[in-house]
Length: 105
Length: 315
Image (cartoon, rainbow over all chains, first blue to last red; front, side, top):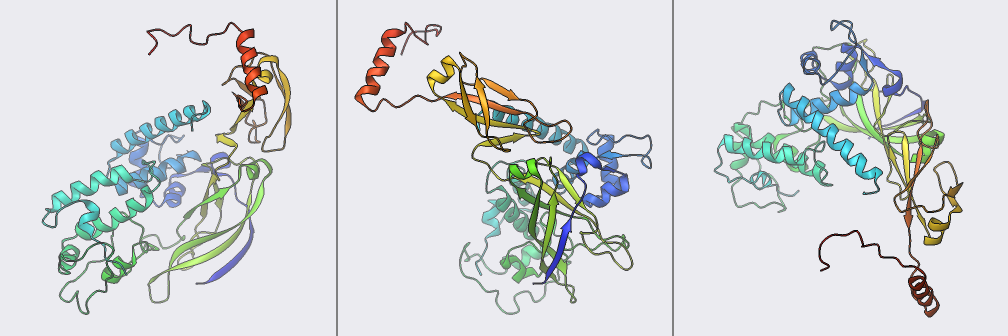
């Protein structure tokens, strides 16, 4: 096993300081452009900008795109199905957070 | 090495058709997918399912696996017989679900290790971006921190085999980071191909479980137990916060479940989150004659029945 020591690295918080182009988002989650484009079409990702060349994705898109990729790859779900699954997962997360706020762990 | 019964993993008979194998896999994969399931074993189960399916969905690999015979049971010590795979040709490459280089020893002994680093020929320039998860304490998000983390990443060695390479990284965790956010470390991903630049490393932040505090986005929650008299009469009590203790004024007549909001005492940022103190009432134990007497005098002092508004006959 090789040991490579690297010192002190800083980086931006993606969700707050980074906007991604289509190419950057695809690179960041190792997804094909066709997938990402299909997810935009389904409303699963909502970039600003008119055409794919102008699209800018918010940092939170990274989390959603990676989740969408895992679900479509592992469970062989098509883009409308992935969009539905993400909506439902968001809803479950919100309900769990509400339980947590009420002190129910 | 232990034998793995892939039919048992998927819950199908050895005589199952390819469609039945696929059906069983799909159903279990949905149930144990780590993004969907809250089962603590979900990730391990899902990995096993992926490995079983990688073998059984592929007619070549399934035939080779079947050749081992049906007398083997999961967990038995196992060595593949010499030349067991003679006459089979594996196409290699795509192993579907699981990450390459991430299968069990059993799988690798039978089918070898295949392309884990996933170098993609059609994108020759920049190296791949990598992802890892980092656990920090909630207090680190309040103050910022410097963390040394170890990452294990699959990499291809000179012979083109997948090896796990360990890297140590010293990372600055910025103040105000929240669970679920990502740090982007430029150039810390996979090395570039040829003259291409290295990929980036994305670190997903998660908080270690904390016995006292729960974070919800930028807000933080704390359960604070009070005595009945503190809750009834009001009091000034010390309460812990991730940034150190504060003195808290409890208003008289506070009920259990009441939330006191300490504005701006959540995770720092613009705007900062809030700290919510959720009040609870703890009853002192009636474990001495004096304590029991105190409860009895309370019963005399109050004309109090908390069940007057309940409907229906008492059981």
